Amino acid sequence: MADRPSPFCCPPPLYPKEPGRDSQEMQQKPDLVIVNAEVVTTDTARPSAQAVAVAVGRILAVGVNADIRRLAGHDTQEIDGQGLTLLPGFIDSHIHLLSLARNTQELDCRPDKAPSVAAIAHRVFEWARIVPPGEWVRCFGYDDLALDERRHPNRHDLDEISPRHQVRLDHRSGHATVLNSLGLRMAGITAETPDPVEGVIERDSNGEPTGVLFEMSAFLSHRVENGRTRNKMQQGVAAANRLLLSYGITSLQDAGPGNGLERWQAFQELIDSGKIQPRVTMMAGSGRLKDLSDAGFSFGSGDANLRLGHVKIMLTMTTGALNPSLEELRDIATGASQAGFPVAVHCVEQEAVAAAAQVISELAPLPPGVPPHRIEHCSECPPEVLDVVRRSGAAVVTQPGFIYWNGPSYRANVAESLQPHLYPIGALVAAGINAAFGSDAPVINPNPWTAIHSAATRQDYKTQTFPESNGSVRVSVQSALRMYTLSGAEVEGTAQNKGSIAPGKLADMILVDANPLKVGTDELKDVKAKMTMVGGQVVWEGQ
Image 1: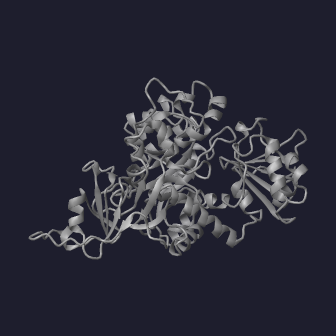
Image 2: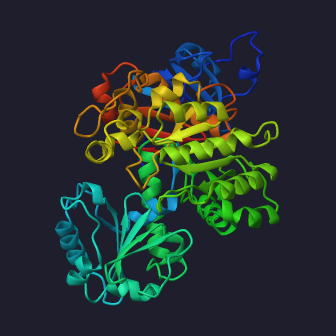
């Protein structure tokens, strides 16, 4: 909380105890009351209110101003909501936190900054001028489908403008990387280097690497100096923390496929030191589950600030075939399930979505209290695939923000017949599938409001409406809001503790400058957080 007095605060009220009132609410005095707000709770028992009382980091009571003020004691702080809207804190159910932190310290080559290969080359040239020779120039965010040339940059493009630096340029999806010739040399990649099991080295007609690498992040992590000092990474974490809090994100689910014991320890250190303030659920990478289990971890290990979640499985079709194969996927998922963990399967293409749903439907029931298995992304989901997903019983964590940010690219590059079935949120809801939202940041900006806007309107950032099927794939604003709050808690198994403003739940809340249920849908993307609270503590304030 800033040192200056909060503009929302005033001296605590001095209300005497009501005679004869001996309820628990009167016995436990709140540390904080928030009054004069439009409270949107996402709790069906009480959808709206004016005020909230907080004690010891949890919500004590929800009600009208007079009732909540009567609970206050001499030491109770009061925040005047000034007519702003109070919402549950957002839960980003699929994000890559440390990648987001890294990107804050790297060269931004997203299409709005660099719309062509030539523009990327110019930005890299300018950036390299301030990087000492011999160090890595790291860049992120290019999208071959959105570039004027409609191709990946290659090593020749980068060699011309950066002959004295190793250059690494990561695709916005995270599934491709471009290295210049010095970078290839540092990575030990030559014409004789075989493709790794899970990746592809693009080659020219002579068999020479072009510099474009697919699904090779893990390969590179073991061979390439990442060029990031501890100090620079801490600066990135601080920037990412501020960004997430400024959007009202109070909980996140980190979906790193390589998450293991070392990553857990890193998160623990960052949380304990206050450098990460949103609550973190860390998925376990499927290849790291044994190490975590051997160290005594099980599903749900940890506490309210850091807990262990689903097992993340990557299912891709980079080579045109399922990777891992259907049988390998079945073995991985079965092993995780037998260890008491639900799985979260990354799948984009409709064949991958169907395969993941099929395997999930074959798994034995999970232990009581463990949330369902999940399909992450579920990007291509025509009706026949949707039915397989429905029958599997899986939850879906998807990204309507992709429609907002990538709509023009999808419109230009995805088959017209498939476009109505990309991220079909409304169809998922109509099928009875519990869906929650994530950003997949840093693939796109983690702002929940652009995703909520897109889920409710099917519009991209150019205000063009993306194609829909006969059955609408939009959802109501109320449903979209739920998917970024309570549904996010349900799919990770923490709905008893967060996701709505209700007595007994963690006091993770945000004040925003407009009521999303009352503004026009075209205004949703412009809603701004004014205050973010985690456990009843103000951790961020806007102007």
